[in-house]
Amino acid sequence: MTADIGGRRERRKAQTRAAVRETAQRLFAERGFDAVTIADVAAAADVAVQTVFNHFETKEALFFDERTPWVELSAAAVTGRAAGADPVSALRAYLESDLVNVLERESRPENRGYVEALEASTSLRTRERTLVEQTGERVTAALTTAIAHGEWSAAPATDPATARVLSRLVADLFLVAGRALVLENRRLVLTSEPDGRRPSAAREATADTLTEVERCARALAGRLLDPAG
Image (tube, rainbow, N blue to C red; front, side, top):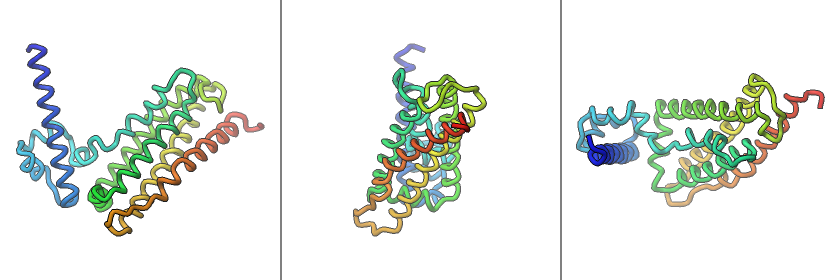
């Protein structure tokens, strides 16, 4: 197989994946997630059912595809930060930017169907919680390395076990706060009139909330690593 043939094949696969995703997400928004089957998606996208499964292992994966970049990028904000940069500050900065974008996007009138589909489906809410847990594990791993090596200005170098406990606590503090803001924003969106006006309370609270979480994380590090201090 030549590189040109291989390249064309990969482009066709990417185009098929994108077409299936766009078709499915449109159907989910129109009918609700639970009312749409993989067979419905395949028919609307004019592909075989097996083609859908070749690209997406579950219907939930299809719903969330390209909608959850934070699963990968939260930890990447720590591991890919500039040399000498504070790992927890880098995490906070990424989460603040991402949360503002998520809250704004989910508040737009044209995206109400997405929020309604998500809130109406138990399986989607379960999958979203799993994605948050996976993100927590990845962020914890990234922070553990940084904290164990003394790269966080709030904590001296420490043993990996202690660094792991502190990292888990810090990761979950940020992610739970972010999840609370997202869920409250969705509640406000779904209880408001679908007339184009959307609440901004959660978005306005994002920066102050995450700044305070970072301050609390630093205080926690001081207590755990120097209880007598």
